[in-house]
Amino acid sequence: MAASGGNSGPGPNTVNHGSPWLTTVAAETFSNELTATVQFSDGTQLRGASSARTGVGPAEVIHASEVAAGDAEAARLCLPGGLTEEAAGKIVLCERGVNARTEKSQVVEEAGGVGMILVNTPSGSLDADIHAVPTVHMNDNGVIEKVKSSDLTATIVPGDTTGLPADPLPQIAGFSSRGPANAVNQELLKPDLAAPGVNVIAGVSPLDPDYHGNTFGLMSGTSMASPNLAGMATLLIGKYPAWSPMAVKSALMTTAGDVYNADGTVNTDNFATGAGSADPAAAARPGLVYESGKEQWDALLRGDIAGRDVNVPSLAIPDVVGSATVTRTVTALENGRWQFSANVPGFEVTASPAVLDLKAGQSADVELTVTRTDAAMNTWTHGSMSWTTAKGKAVPEVTSPVTVKAKSATVTSAVEGSGATGSADVEITPGVTGELTPQVLGLGKVDSTVAAATASNSLASSALAVSTVTVEEGTQSLVASINAGAAGADWDLYVITPEGKQLSRATADESETLTIADPVPGAYTVVGHLYAANGGKDTGTLETLKLREDAGNLTVSPNPVPVTSGKATEATLSWSGLTSGTWKGLVTWDAGITTDVTVQVP
Image (cartoon, rainbow, N blue to C red; front, top):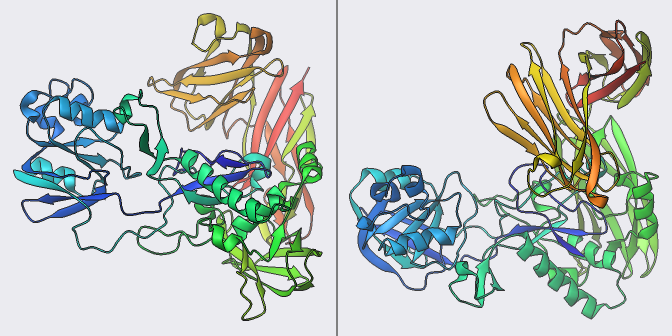
């Protein structure tokens, strides 16, 4: 199944669909055909995305704020009613944001404008929508200041008349969601690969005002990329009906091509590209495939195996402490000898065996070992590993993305204790020799509010659990959470800061948590919202926790902790002076290496 990776990029940890049985697809550009050029009277030419087949001009070009009907912000964004009729006969520059891109050109047309320059601030995806007036969509490369500060005319011309080199293809769309995927400890690399998802011709409803009565339109999104990939998979299944879905996924991933950055260099960020740009022609002869199935998937869901051990055609390891080893099984689709190689900067990746002699239908287990050489600690590194046939054989390299992170140690992730005074041991496996200097936050006492609520998709008072918390000077962290009382409930969480800013966490999960680092002192309002529940009701527990370094009730011994790479050791956490209730804290051993501490006091 091809699944959309999401349109919440380019930030990290935004990708959806982390399951290994899904093929998660990023969106990429695939054509420069939908382009137009704005030719200014000073000789400047700027190109951008456009579906315009006819041009306009020369005409006076203005910034939308110059013809504001009232509110300057509404004019800048070309919101409905934002422009006066002084825009008549002019090309209007509108800035992206708030309302639909196509609505902006409708606003320009209604004000009498004859063309639009749509500008991203900041840079983002460029979309060749079908607009009410000829439109060019571009990033702000100085054009806003040019139009504001100069009395210019301009002409919009279909096509690229700049004479500049064409934009490299394909590129990952700015909106395409990025990894790492938070599922299963970030041990499944997502997205899996990329497919065309920018300015794709698609069927639309003629009743949708954005498409002006047409039955087709230009759409962008990973929801365009995933059906393109599904179509490629259909071609492969038509040619090889005996292939399993995972063999098809493997074939597309291991034969994928390069994706590029705007400057023409190869994009090596596996969290953006996955295995690369899907190529169905190359995938028709993959040589070797990696297959997983229900047995492994069930084991993953039960927690019997780690994500890194699922037999997918990629490798993601978030905690290489010195070295890490996993196993992959490859199956040959034709006779051949295969030689292993890898290129992951700062790491050595080896395979045992490194040479495979396989006949069609035979499988082989391969032990892959990733060893840190000089990679930076706590930083993801991207690379690849390949199986190559004998020279001259017309089979592509079988290449898989590899993304790994070196860590100075692994530690017990959580400890629990009880009593006003007590201790607990933390196991440490170091990947370095020297010292670890732990930093302690807490312990802090959890403040709980229990509330019965009736589910509602609006913020009705009956659907809310509300509490307030006062944060004092010196607080390093404020943690707010809403915990569901029963399975199937869907609580969302909102925090209103002393400045009136609203923070939120609203997913399909039963419970939600928000952590605010270095919170501003003052009163915070914490709101749990029951969005849905089995039977329409649930009793949730709203919790707040304030953590500070100088609480003085939790210590680590020894501190610092002497460590030798590869040699396991222990440290002891001790607490004292606690009163009745639930207490929580956090010990940070190194960047990204933490132990959660919970102590219950009767």
